[in-house]
Image 1 (cartoon, rainbow, N blue to C red):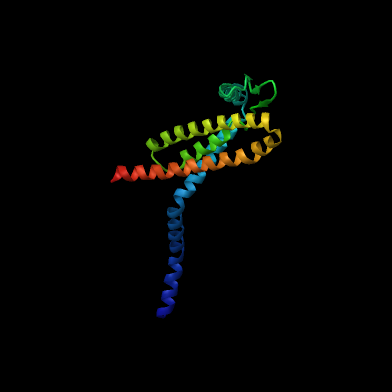
Image 2: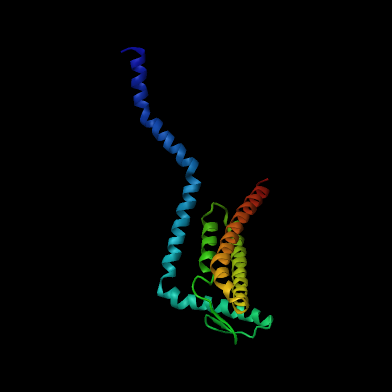
Length: 195
């Protein structure tokens, strides 16, 4: 057997191990992203499974909606709107809105919290990130409900546009912005701790 034949035979013998080494290298390189995507998918699946249960629909959702409508009504009354809140309905003598599922901010908060929890970082950074981000998103949702009530009572033609187009985009942008801010903050804090 000549030199080139031996080299080809040796190369053929090493091809599977070279292939496996390449796969392993790719896995190591992409592992954090794959773990994040996998954890995010699992957590969101669990959230949506939990959300369709009777326990959530009948035992938790009505309280979340009532909290949103009661707080919004309280602040609207500070502006002299003379509203009342009954379960999910905020009403005045001239206008009323219903704070339904999807208007309570729960899904946006779940997406934010899930993305943050799935991200590879220490828990000492995750806990304040989740709590702070959820507080900001909850507050933003109250502002959204109040603004929609004010718009609906004064400029009814703008209500649907503000409700569907503007506020949904604002919520998504703020949630993504908070997540990116948290990533930068946690990385900076981690770097400061390790220095």
